[in-house]
Length: 152
Image (cartoon, rainbow, N blue to C red; front, top):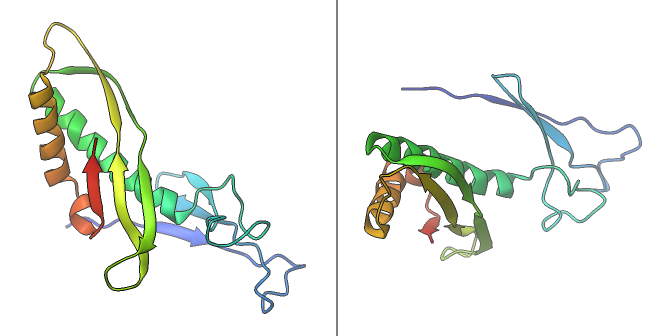
């Protein structure tokens, strides 16, 4: 068993009444390695100026978490198969809508990784697809959510 922690901090601004629901949703995420991420609600959920568009919102972090987990397993599997990867860029997107239980949720995430291999040993499309399938099957985050995850 492994345990992971994050500290999420929010502080009411002195000029925010709070009870009028017109308060800043800006907050920070602190991680055990020392990284601090400026976070906020999504402007799609809480309109500006109460959200901070430049900050990371939970929905973006959710998508990034799935993409990052998939990528890390993909890299590991490719390395074991002796394929050299120069870079990996994923243009991940998510769709938030009513689910089958009539709750708003992230129903679909699409990963669109673009991978540049180098060296003499180049994978076929079938080999790359198989590595993606294995990465998806092993991804802890994908195994933890009910969201449909597509890889293009």
